[in-house]
Length: 266
Image (cartoon, rainbow, N blue to C red; front, side, top):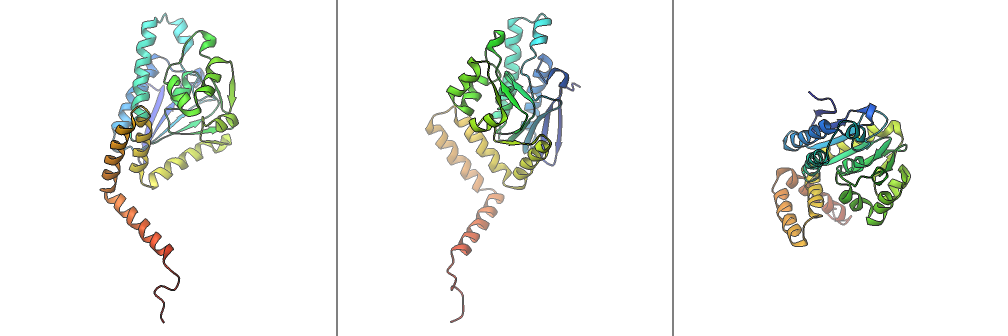
């Protein structure tokens, strides 16, 4: 079994861990196939309700393994085929109903940006850095970067990264909306685990459906989104978990708004 991406499941949370630290977790052809296969495995597993995406070593992901591409005799057709494989995994995870949190340390470069943005909530170390580098080596964006990056930070800022040799630090990434939180390096793993526990302790399915509506809705017209919202909120309300939570909320709201003299003896 390949060890390029580790996978485990505990208490409803799947963990996908990039595991090529000596290559800064750059994705080669084999790792791309494993990414796709694991994406389908965890999203189709009813026991998995949330996903953590992280990495071993000093970097989160340096994108595609260009050293392997340059030395293996790979053709343009092979690169295209592999991109389609990796894109399958990205699309599967991004459009699923499983909320995903990413723990990002060190460098995130090139296609690593797209892999990171597959997650719905990104927590970065204070030492994380973000850079494109595509055009520097004569390549064009892949792994969702041309779509996911401008969706996260806007078209103009995305072009700043893609058209200049600019490295963005964690504080700037937070200001731009590229990441949701920045924490000390030693706090990264605990904070990401805390996010996962928050989802699991709440209305997990509702978090997942909210994520799916936003992700899928970005590529549809308003009418289709409104129809999906109507169906989804109805299906949610029909569940026992939702009915219990709504009833508890309503009871709490009634108690909070009840006049102080109500129910007192006269």
